[in-house]
Image 1 (cartoon, rainbow, N blue to C red):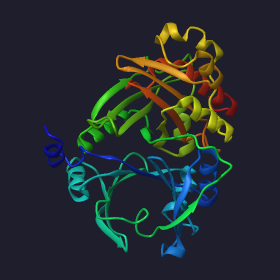
Image 2: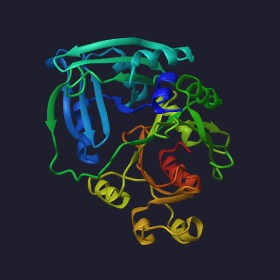
Image 3: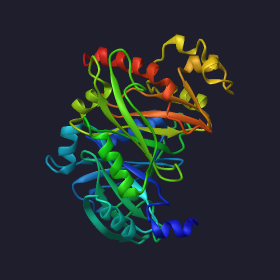
Length: 371
């Protein structure tokens, strides 16, 4: 099937990431954090000064990454209630589509709950069409059509550029995947949701035998578009002797939501060094993990001692290998964090690293008294 034929038969076949919007308690301070720690540049602003009432939003960009940080300016609205319940967290994973109306109709026909029908917003830069559907917890997906817009981002935003000269640029490229944590027994139904609504297929799944330690376990499945461009792993808790990271997340977040985003780089060693220099904290890895690394994963281009020094994990599948590392939570609640990932052919999600990763997470849970 040609790309044109496929896009006509399924308007959600040719999609990409557009932006991720966080609801936060203080957008100005959050923007400064992401600029100083992760090397983003501020590009645009929306708020009362631009005709947007009751909220302030800052658009941050880095290569193909686009984050919107939004805070309420009033004591009780949707944003303020979201932050009161969840803390700072991801509200909207926006998807770029060619035709919002067709994408929205397809999604609703597949069982998605509509939140905003296709709506045109415009300014001197042209117009954008967007729509919104619900997904797990309070998280939503916007569909965004940009073909007729030449403005800075979207109506309501004005260009407002700021760069922190003191922050090193880590070379973060784009979102690799975005992981949702859902409640007990809900993984399969949300996997089915992405199959019905988006036409996604299951790339891989992991059960509690794959993802477990002596104490904790979880189950996961990865849903993906045909191009493996947009991928949504879905995690749920599994029974273990103690409270798993998924249960801890659900408790602190107040329900289902985005656990982490994996962000691609093409030079993970340089990226992690830059992020560490900016003050980003990462999960540790037991030193013994590196003792027989090449025996486990085969020949790799990177020096083992560099990987050991930076605490970078490696895993291989039949397509190649990948390198990954995880930050500590990005705010005081142990909820949202980032994964930094470099792929060298591999489509895997680090199955061979789960044991070492979970041990590291359990150490942090133990410090918090939540294990």
